[in-house]
Image (tube, rainbow, N blue to C red; front, side, top):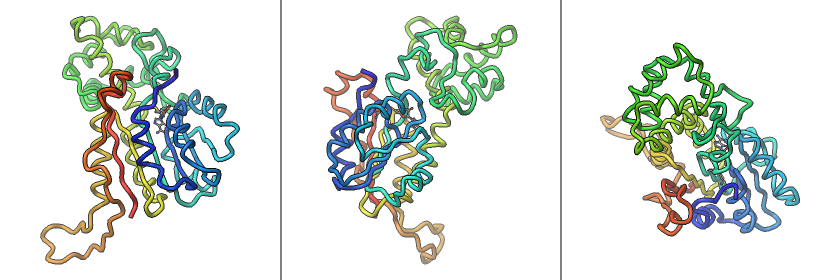
Length: 305
Ligand SMILES: C[S@@+](CC[C@H](N)C(=O)[O-])C[C@H]1O[C@@H](n2cnc3c(N)ncnc32)[C@H](O)[C@@H]1O
């Protein structure tokens, strides 16, 4: 099992409103949601999928090779507009992303996402772009490191960890997951170690992949290529991501953006979205029991008006 899809029924129920429609999934991963979406679509439908991880892309390319409705791209979901042009699609009836990383990426030694294995400290989903986490750890100043750990990992010990990294790199280059683990292990009580390491690795991953910036860029573009009554469905795993989605949906429902002191509206704003989920949908206890990685998932849905 490469990955157990999270909130599967809830995603499909909210996404598919036209079984002959055009659909975009930005995070195909190992095709769990893709398979379920396709099973709810008929022969006239079209499905476009992206993933920036080469293993995920190749896995799905092979998995769906006989389905002529499917067109896949190894790309960031921020390329949604370029990709819709390439695929001759003007607007979509449903757009879906299931953010973060797959279990395969987390567990696979070569991905360098896990502190449980000794591997190069990389953490990029697309290893052909940008720089690995080790690059930043060896160069960023102490203040920047504190910010990354605190903002993206909500790690209370950020200062101490950043200081230890800066002191370690005076005599050693940080190249591997095990080196980083060793630095943190030195002063972290055993009972807090796994949680601390998870937070630090998560923070570095979010930073290295510019996950929040890409999400903001994607949401704006996605709404521009969504058909009237089309749905946008987003699953997040981090409070900062969820806040971005929640605020974005809210902003797009506004009827006026004039400063409050204006006596009459002059902005002529028209709302673009209607929120379908006032509160996010979260996994049931049953789902979390079977798949612990589902525990922080939140699903939000909006409709284009
Ligand atoms: C949680 S997994 C998706 C799992 C998938 N729903 C399934 O059922 O197998 C998230 C996937 O999104 C990909 N990903 C994350 N950010 C991305 C981005 N900006 N553009 C494209 N793919 C991205 C990751 O590489 C990963 O494969």
